[in-house]
Image (cartoon, rainbow, N blue to C red):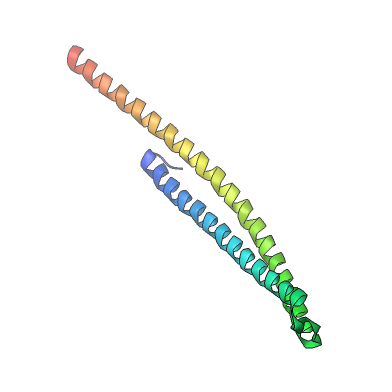
Length: 126
């Protein structure tokens, strides 16, 4: 267990880095979902608009690509759910560490003020 605010502050900085990494992972997953959605939109647009949509080979390729996109989106959705849970946990831990650090600093400040007061009293009356 940490004994002073310096140790807690070090743990707080580490916890903050983990929190930021979780945030970055969420952003990366969101970007991947967006890219897949764009691919899906382009394929569906090509199927609905062009002369190519009437060729069986194009339709089969498009269907296979759509199937892979749907599978990948399901994997990303599951990963995002797990990372989001971890992100929430890290946010809570970061908040607790900040509170613990503030409490520890307050205790150290009070102890220092008490020592200063005792030194002053000792010099004055001792």
